[in-house]
Amino acid sequence: MLLVMENLYIQREIEPVVQHYVPQFPAIALSGPRQSGKSTLLKHLFSKTYRYITFDDPLVIEQARSDPVFFLDNAGDRIILDEIQYVPEILSYIKMRIDDNRNKKGRFIFTGSQKFPLIKNLGDSLAGRIGLLELLPFSSEEKKQIPHPGISFDETENLFVHACLAGSFPEPVIAQMDINAWYSSYLQTYLERDIRTIHNIGGLRDFQLFLKLLASRCAQTLNLSGFSRDTGISIQTLKRWISVLEAGLVIYLLPPYYNNLGKRITKSPKLYFLDCGLVCHLAGIRSKEHLLNGPMAGTLFENFCIQETVKTYMNRGFIPGIFYTRTNNNLEIDLIIESMPGELHPVEIKLTKTPKQSMELPVKRFRELFSALSVKKGRLLCLSSKSIPLSRDTDVVSFQDYLLWLKEIIRS
Image 1 (tube, rainbow, N blue to C red):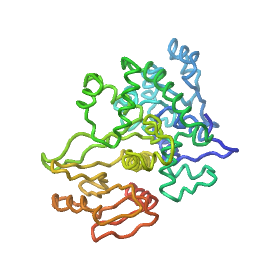
Image 2: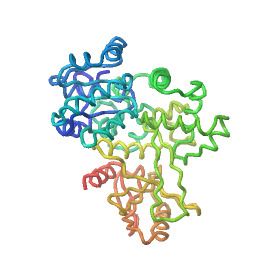
Image 3: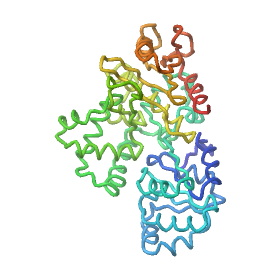
Image 4: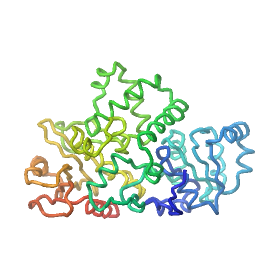
């Protein structure tokens, strides 16, 4: 897949981090969902200095499995091994080569469509010698490089609608192709190749139905008991499926913040997808009118804001320092950003262009209930085109200003 439209390369926000990691470690691993642009990014950055080998080719897989020592001897000093999850057994041989000369940096670059366990194990055994990065589909900032006649991506509503109805994966966004046909093919490929090949998940039909059920309940607390009752599938099986989707960066589980908050806090994570377009495809949302006026409008906007928050962290090489909170007396904060240990920034997310002071009540209650915490000024993230003070405790922030502020938080 080429991220090119009329010879225009779409620069990815993570590129400076990748370039910084390569001379720091003997190996780096770039994971991410299938078709998120991993191969294209690495070819763009390193085509003149690295040999590119893909394990999408069955012949190459057989060569690497039958004689891994010979394969690596002939691969060259600097190699990109694409989709390494198909040949995990080669990692032990790579580990030995790294151990033989740990001072030689940038020898191996791996990509994978899963945060596969062996890479995690390799990271544990070579702590400080392998850099782990994750690439998600296009962020809203990256999309602005692509010509979209008649659409202004300076407006939050347009970004939100486009994320839902066109998705964020490079191929359909750039080619502006039939999005539902693309997602249908993508799901089939994902289910057949990654799920069936790598994971023993049981019935694919049940798994597909489970995906649709998850989509209908995005931005809600994960309730495996409820899913089990609705589907007739055991909780253990559902846990395994959730782990597969999380490892493949299809979904994101937003953890609750309950440090020092006692037993009054819900401790189950909230479920989000990392691509709103996939949610809309699974939920059958096909038009702007259905999106903005349908029952999932608010939850999809919340999902959009969370997915872009996660991308902002990951594109800078950081694990997201984000949480939510829900108490047993129904106080809920949609998003809590921890800028440093114990320093909390509450964010409420509302699909509105008319912010009201009543919308900041959860932030005020949170501040009052947990006055011992270092709670900073709250933010109301909505469709507003400009940022304005809402009260002494809370500011209305536009989506663009929110991203700028978040990048400053991450840098600090």
